[in-house]
Length: 114
Image (cartoon, rainbow, N blue to C red; front, top):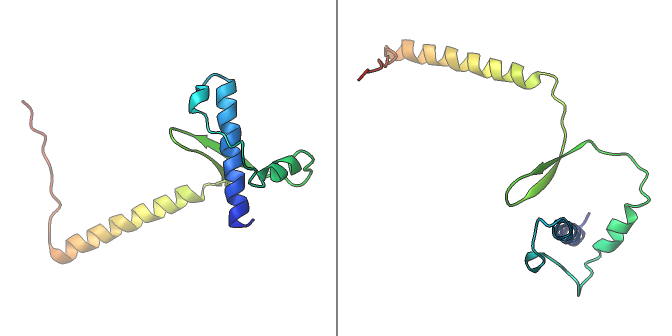
């Protein structure tokens, strides 16, 4: 997709999201985003989705204050946990090696009760 096409699609998405927010009462009509005088070419892109019968991606919608996102869902079969464990173990070994070479002792913090 070219940059102008991507920009046009983003504008069309803003227009759709804004009009849906007005229709559901989540946004006052005077604060809505609307593009009425220009067609950035996105109407053709959106219209082509009506008859789309190709592969469907596994997408996840993320919504929050300010911006909504759609991201590709990536399955995790536990590799992240294994990598976290390996990195933590490496940090413990590296800390012990540094302490041993510099002959520093770890600082022990005592809690003070009032």
